[in-house]
Image (cartoon, rainbow, N blue to C red; front, side, top):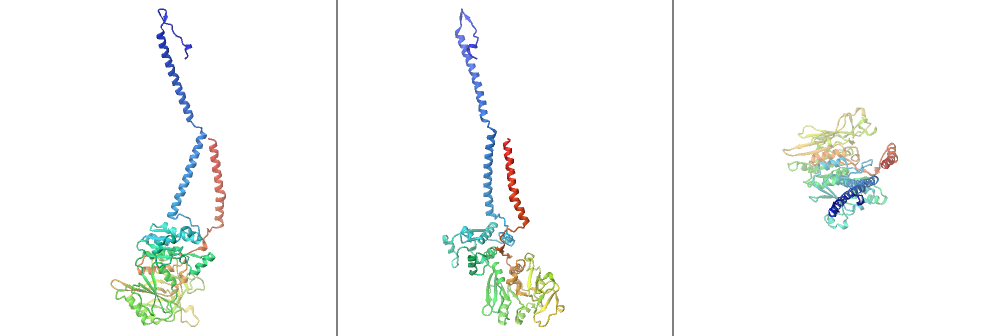
Length: 534
């Protein structure tokens, strides 16, 4: 309200206006007017501020979109880091190979879960980069070592370059250490075993290793067997000792010897003609000698089994269809109530034969006794040219039949010179492996007789789907009181591929080339139109 619009009342006092009072009244009115104008201005400023603070919805959605994108990218990065850590720690990788090349065997997991009772260090004598850069085969070796370390907290895996770690090499004085070796060590006792490329690739010698470096081909990976075998060995501070005899034309026992050695046994060879059986040996293996032992060698066996009256010793004898008659060995066995017939077991039932022509190579029955537990019965046991093992009356020894033929087997005499009459052959069920046990008050000694060395020979022990390795390892473990060993099938490099049928390949093609791209496009279009109409 301006001054020109105000009506100023004229108050006279003695004919004159009272100017003092009028001035005071005008001042009060002006002060009130300014207060009103100030209040109106303040409210206007508040409204303007609120208006400024109210953002454009499009700007608001843009900020939210940026924030969401940043959060999503951060989440993806964090998830990738977590997955990477879990993969390194727990081996979370998918094995798409047909043979399970990059997957631990169930037997390995069984050993690590129940029998590994000490801390183990695995050291590769190369940097990890150098090791995997050696080629595809070494990558597989590295992957299995990583899986072992990830599976058990008791196992640590390290890589080191020998040139930069002289102190490590000095700890193994007298040993040859070069690049790409694997050292498995008991952290507590220091007991160790060194695995070379020849070992973990299952090669015969250095020549085969050079063959790889020249031609770039290796057939199998044995790193899992070798690593677990080394762990079994270094974990046992007092391993059982097994002696294989020689001097009488024994057949090759490499497969059985290797199996026992790989499962923590100390294995050595003694010539019965010139040497004595070690007092600290737990068992002696006589593997199909081609000539008979004489009284002197048999006396060594008798002394070993008696053990100064304390017993506690064991002898494993493997016969052969190639042997001549061995009356001295037969006499030794008869003292333990055992006899090996001079014939071989055959089968005509096709259910037990490998094919129609192999009468004398057939499946065997495993008897579930104290020495052959169900956990060691894997698939079937394969035998060839098995001689029957009989138990004799008149002895106080206890007998355990560990393996026998199926019913309606027949016997073919080894001294048969004429035409064999199958219809007139002796038939029945015949024992293949028998254990004879002699007991004292607090200990036992045993003699185990097997009808053929082929049961534990190189050929039949190599059958991946047969249980021969598992059977004999179970017998030795049970007899010698060992923790249960394991038998792991070698993994073939010939099957490193993702094997899928044509139908599966088509499904993957549709998913990867059509479903996923179309889904992404549709998702993008939906998001675009939703944002545009907001």
